[in-house]
Image (cartoon, rainbow, N blue to C red; front, side):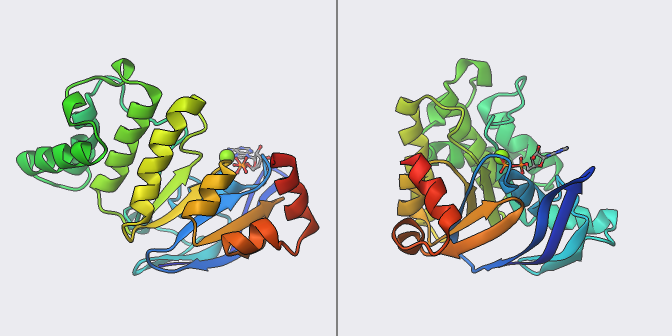
Length: 243
Ligand SMILES: Nc1ncnc2c1ncn2[C@@H]1O[C@H](COP(=O)(O)OP(=O)(O)O)[C@@H](O)[C@H]1O
Ligand SMILES: [Mg+2]
């Protein structure tokens, strides 16, 4: 589903991603862990071209691009392969929960208004928020806003869902509701990449874990291997500091 090779990104003189290579199969769930500043967000943002990579070949679904030579048209169609769930939800504040979903369907995906509304309502029901369809983000709890963010990400039926610390802004007692929702999606054959600091969650939902440090994936493996039989000192130190 995803193949990335030779991905590089620098900001000024700082190398945020350095020769990153990996591939992810359809319906695989991969969690990306690692210290702050290791390039996790830059990696996810490169996959939907919110960050423009300096070099590398990226393939998602049936679209392949070469970072050095990107046309506007390629950028637009490549972006449609993924959707992103952000730490700070990034909802439109002046739109209702339902409109936050339908606007994207109508204006960027050409879905008819009635159909967009139907799909939006079905998704809100799926995330347990049908009764909040007409509510504005400011009147919703953080957990509810993030559930709208997740419903919006699902609405465009992307090949891959990218989640960047989806629960980091939430109070501990609300985190569980969003983690449970993500875990239920992980069971549904969706392909997902999740940047998270929730280690027990990562261990439970992931098929594989990537550990990043200094712009590289320095270790990857099944959760059990990473958490109990890591071969890298740096991974063990990081996990130890977290425990
Ligand atoms: N837009 C940017 N401009 C300059 N530096 C950036 C930018 N985005 C990220 N960086 C730098 O790149 C490094 C990796 O950032 P990031 O991918 O956000 O790390 P993580 O998500 O693992 O915490 C950090 O040192 C960060 O300061
Ligand atoms: Mg980050």
